[in-house]
Figure 1 (cartoon, chains in turn green, orange):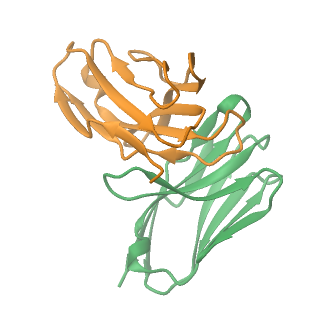
Figure 2 (cartoon, chains in turn red, brown; figure 1 turned 30 degrees about the vertical axis):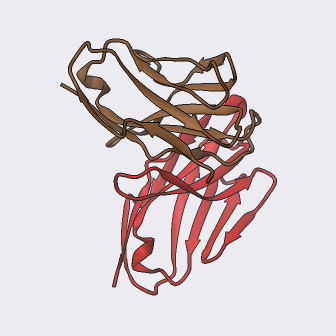
Length: 111
Length: 114
């Protein structure tokens, strides 16, 4: 069974800290992996998309890495800000349009 | 502005009263999908469509119907809603059928069935 796990479920850090969010998946035959941000009561906003042939993607203060062999991805957030507070979800894309979501990590950045 | 638009955003209804949640995208995307999000269960796919007149079941299709008569629209139909369909629903789209593209989400529709 294809499962995606995100640990921790919640994380609280002081402003300015660098942090890493983790995503692990059981089936390594992936097509891609996408990181999303979800604010309370809102939809999901795509942050970074990594194809299966790539090792990492960067956008501003965000860097996502992918290690297919170990079934892991990390989202690195540099110099965190209170505005980064949200729930971060990873989603793994498989054959025939199957997309499996993790349950997310709720991040709180304290001023 | 490129977007996925869902309506209504909030709805309270009663058991058995048919309802439709509309979804429209203005990006000429081939692929569209519906998800529901529930506490502790995460996001689960209901139905998806790879193109006009092509729809397939996701993980939790029971109690739902969809149609894709036009490329831009993908309505979700609850013929006889029940309380266990109380949830936050999301429509999403992406450019093509190949599972390599970025997925764009609507703002969500919060449905309560009494």
